[in-house]
Amino acid sequence: MGIHQREDVEKGGKNGLEDLKKPLVQGEKIIVSNELGCETDGSSSQNGSDGSIWMVLLSTFVAVCGSFEFGSCVGYSAPTQSAIREDLDLSLAQYSMFGSILTIGAMLGAITSGLVTDSLGRKGAMRMSASFCITGWLAVYFSMGALLLDMGRFFTGYGIGIFSYVVPIFIAEIAPKSIRGGLTTLNQLMIVCGSSVAFLLGTVTTWRTLALTGLVPCLVLLIGLFFVPESPRWLAKVGREKEFEVALRRLRGKDADVSKEAAEIQVYIENLQSFPKAKMLDLFQTKYIRSLIIGVGLMVFQQFGGINGIGFYVSETFVSAGLSSSKIGTIAYACIQVPITIVGAILMDKSGRRPLLMVSASGTFLGCFLTGASFFLKSNAMLLDWVPVLAIGGVLLYIASFSIGMGAVPWVIMSEIFPINVKGAAGSLVVLVNWLGAWVVSYTFNFLMSWSPTGTFSIYAGFSAMTILFVAKIVPETKGKTLEEIQACIDS
Image (tube, rainbow, N blue to C red; front, side):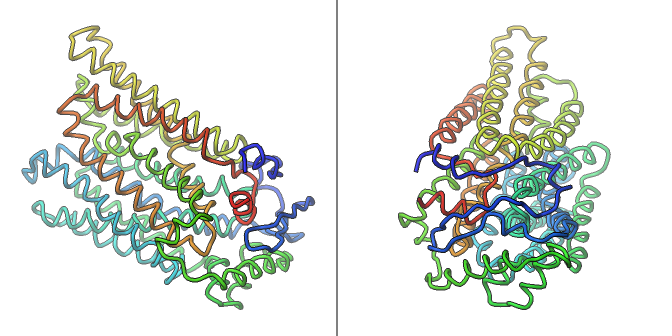
């Protein structure tokens, strides 16, 4: 099925943050046939004359505390590099291991994320993740050498590996389709908020105190989970029908008519019961291969564009470019992420996923080009006054472009493109690929920079250019479609 055919199925109206003010009722019906052979009513996911969105918003807020924790872990290594190396007498190789071992733990979390999320439920998985992160931060705080430091970093990595899968899945499963993209984008927004806060606090606090601040989002999440419902789709999948109806009514409002949406989900789940339990190898079947290529491909291009290398060691990058103090560049890096990600969240359900991805990848290409050019000028002693300006401008353009699309959109699409019977296995594989790429990039960054800063950023620019081609040729538009409609489109 061609891209233009997918767009013909789309029935989106005006979407975006203003939809938060609208009732969940849509007058227009969209009847499509999904891959299970049952008809789905595109409007049925938004039934009810007096539907309430407040529980959806509260549930999303609680879930994205895990995303904030994710950002806190990722952002921790950049402002603390020199202090930790000095206090604990770590070599460059030892600190590179500390920075990158987070991603090794996250890979293990990714491998088990589908099983944990499907077995314990979305809320149970988030509780487990928070517990690992709390343990990890305490280990970092009390560390007196590389061993306990690395163990703590590994534990936080395992926790955020599960968070990176379960948070967007949970939000996608509870949100009405008209605001699903915007709410799921809050996952990335809170990641960059957590990262930015870690960057800013790291300039004014010690590295041990900064580790303690990582406990806060975990505690808020653990408390908040007592007040929000479980994912109705997961409850239906495991046969807890009474809890399923209660959860759905809590999310849509006590006076909302949820009968159509409940029936749609139940029919879909009942048909899925005839499918055997999906294994990793099942994902390579013809009917899933397109979704797999899209999900894995987006994660590969997201990571090998260099985000974790640049983000983990941004302070040292600025110093290498000749900036007298890395604090100015680091603070600017932290501050620019949040407003740009908010813009991306607003545009997510307005412009669509594909345009955001292509604009974002174009910007990361240009940012890498400018940063690489700054190091080229420095190595050849040319226009030395312009070197720090180009370096800061290139990195800030890179992170702004990444934040508007490449940061959030791959996770949104990942949560949308896989049918629920393979979502656990597929999510584990996609998140595993993402964290494997993150480890490769974060571990090799310092060594590549020692080899050739210009060459390093040229490699990242090349992957950004390939991202544009991949999105243009392979990735479908999912804006304004229910999860069932997306499956019908991909499988047609």
